[in-house]
Length: 319
Ligand SMILES: O=C(O)CCC(=O)C(=O)O
Ligand SMILES: [Fe+2]
Image (cartoon, rainbow, N blue to C red; front, top):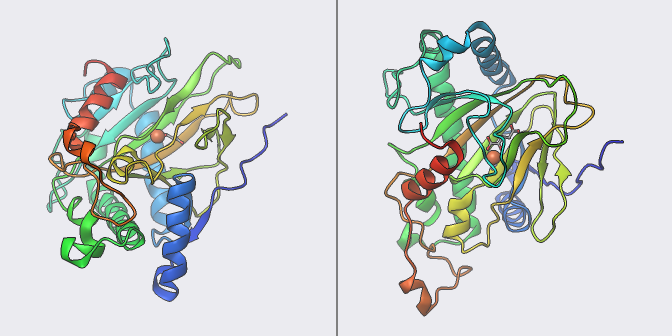
């Protein structure tokens, strides 16, 4: 029997930002404080482009041998190809995740990859992939405006542009194609993506037909399925927002598991990880909602780059 669907994942209509900003901001604030996950509709990225990026990812995985893929294995930025079991998102588990992935970093204005050498197949598609990444990034910047308004960051501190400024250029943002191959038999000991929180600021997750994503809402030890809703992007808060808001915005555990219905099916997903510049500090933001106290001064403040590298190296081991 399938598990009940968690019914409280909010759906935010981004067109409200233009027509009823107050409602949009309040709904988003509630979503970030309660669950840290929400669906976005009317987000402005066309379904045709999303279908095309899934198509590119699928062809990349299908049309290249293991040896060919490994020529572009993960580099020092953790960009590139990661074979099945390479990543182990839940470091308490023995076996790695049953998935292969390809991570693409930022492009320059000439649509050239800045952080890696792309395999010829993806390089040929850069005219499509680079603007798609930029569109994802612009959507994230718009979401950050909503967050800054929600947190009432003072004009003198940067106001609604506070988070945007920290994600302007030369960030560690990246897009990851995930391919979860089918299993011959259902084995409850295996997992497609171990339980984890995301390391960056926010993640845009594009899901497609086959589900399996589950979340663990705050203060529970239960897992709830996150259904795929066509034409909606799933947004989740990453660790950096939890640091910036002292836990007010939730970065919650999620995983992709096998179940009796999906173990024999191929699964594809695409994540855009929006990550701040490497030197951006993760200290509490100037907001009346985030109290500061004397002890804050004694705490070692991480940068976004330090946090990312710690978590990525734990999950991937050596590159
Ligand atoms: O594939 C998915 O649905 C989720 C993947 C995920 O959580 C991640 O890559 O951080
Ligand atoms: Fe994740």
